[in-house]
Amino acid sequence: MKKIKLLFVIAFLGLGIVLSAQQRMNYQITVKEESDNDFFVELNVDKKLGKEATLFQFASTAPGTYQTMNIGRYVHDFEVLDKKGMPLDFEKLSVNQYEITKPKKVKTIRYRISETWDTKVDANPIYPMAGTSVEKDHAMISPHAVIGYFPEYQTNPYGVTLVLPENWKIGTALEKEGNSYVANSYDHLVDSPILTGRMTYADTLIDDTKVEIFTYSQNDVVKSKALLNAMHGMLAASKAFLKYIPAERYTFLFHFEPSPPAPTGAWEHSMSSQYVFSENNYSGDLSGIVQVASHEFFHIVTPLNLHSEKVEHFNFKEPDPSQHLWFYEGVTEWASLILLLRDGKMNIEQYFNELQQKVMVDGFLDGSWSLKDLALKSYTPRGQQQFVNIYCRGALIAGLLDIRLLELSNGKRGLREVILELIAKYGKGKPFPENGFFEELVTMTYPEIQDFIDSHILKNEPLPIKEYFGLLGIDYKKGGQGNSPTFRVKLKPTEEQLKLRKIWLKNL
Ligand SMILES: [Zn+2]
Image 1 (cartoon, rainbow, N blue to C red):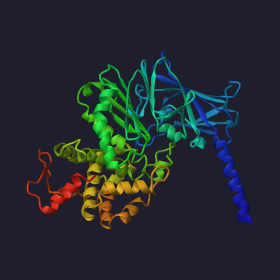
Image 2: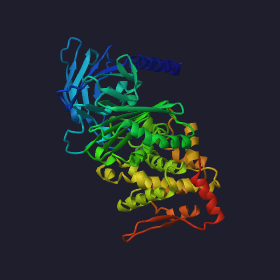
Image 3: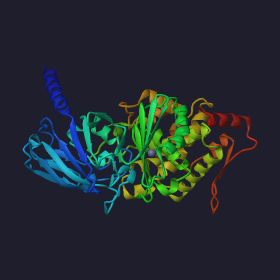
Image 4: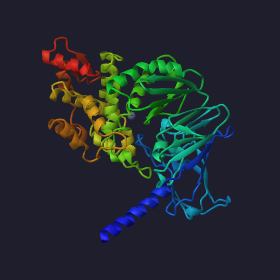
């Protein structure tokens, strides 16, 4: 009886939280022509906030960035107002947190927040593609770097109204409802950057997926149409690799200017990706961008569909890394290149070239860091220095895992097939277990994969590149003393090597 009573109480409390949790959090972001450094943000509460909503939080980090951001550093003139516009008390608890004394009286929260690009900080500069910029003719809005939130209402719906200078185009994967762009949670909002201003536009259909491209190019050097033409083959190759594209629509947001802040690059989202490059490097040959776009686009698979609970319930209050970075970034980087090779969009010499560069970068970095170390220490200053290796050694190891799986399955099931099986089992809203994922991989494949994980993900033993590529009839020479490592197709492979190489190459 007692137990049942207790259950009723819990159910009732749960219902209370759900009811108050449903109100849409409505924000307005204003970009003023005369103020090209700041966003002016207002949260207006329609219904009363619950008394539990005492904490207003700015993001300490954001998914997929693996860096400490402390967005609270950019906030000014923070104000809490009641329905008569009178100021209410609050206390600043830490760089990212404000405590609100009487949440039930709150009508408006208002603040000014500086762009991350042009604001000098002493430590932890934010990657430009995960930051914000406001200029006379455009603005880049990464929502976690503009919008603070109540952790109590992380899973509420969100609405954002943009007040912009006249004639600015808006590029985002968010849907529009009336005047507002809407998201079904704070996580969804953060997952949907907005690029606005004087932009070119192009779109296409890849099967049923609508692909849109918005491009800001300060001196009109790069246009959306040219980017779309350059990326068309990659999009088709991605579709062939995955069999279908797990998104109804996808938005590419490109920002070009002569000297953007370093490091340039891109940031992935579930239905979009945001790119920052120098205009000077990309007036003609766009193949470098296509490779980056291939990587970001593949992120719709992992971590955006396939991820552990740590990514599913993201902790914006403090960094809490997942050990499976090897999968999110290493496997993605491997896939983004091999899908181009397998679909004939990249030849084998170009592919070897990519591998060679990755071996060389790995050689320059600290060989004592395992992929697990890279994951768990990515938020430390040392970790940030080593981080690039997740794209190098991480991708090499994913490639070796693919060959090992092909070898063990007699050519039937490589890493691509394992990924497709994982997509069928997990996916959006169904995270894999952070702690049981390695075990699961071994169970669904071969006992030998446990040794592979122990040696090359949990520890950092020398990579068996020569041995594994040898199985494909590809010779690998280590280089050293001023010589680069080399990969070469053997002229006289054995029958077995030739058979496995053909499968490896055309494994679609
Ligand atoms: Zn990535």
